[in-house]
Image (cartoon, one colour):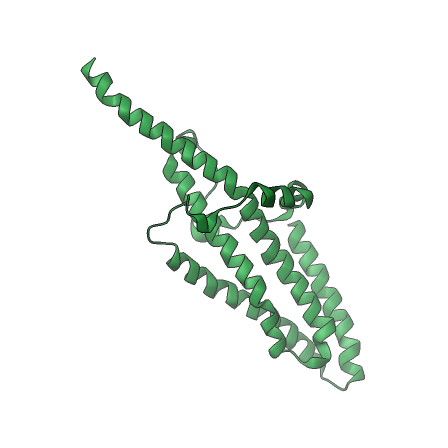
Length: 201
């Protein structure tokens, strides 16, 4: 909710400062709303397309322990220096959009498949948001040059809040999730090894 309010404030400031610029350059006010909405739509569509792409790429033979998804301790310490424990509270949980709920039940806490799915969504979200942020500046190609400063910069700031921050948060959480996944895998393996012995007894 907090993040949405911040985005709305940035949007209002962007549009509010763009209208005088448009009038002074004899540009219709409707062009302000068109350019601003076009930038946001571009970011949104890019996000949706990347969502489909990365979910397809990582769908088959997903290995949570792959070096491709490794996050070092130094990187985690860097995120902690940014006070991530404070600002992560404003990042909304959108897992429900892909049919994944993070509420833990007693069964899920001890289920490696739950953590594997959690890691799958974590990896997808991190890559999705990071690359969406990287390609966001492309909307400047479609933006009226007069509004580069009053619309382009605020839209980049919105993309930063909605994409880069969530991407960093996902990477910050990954080592903990991976540790829980590997722990539950070991417990399940140990439990399976003990079952034959119990049957003989």
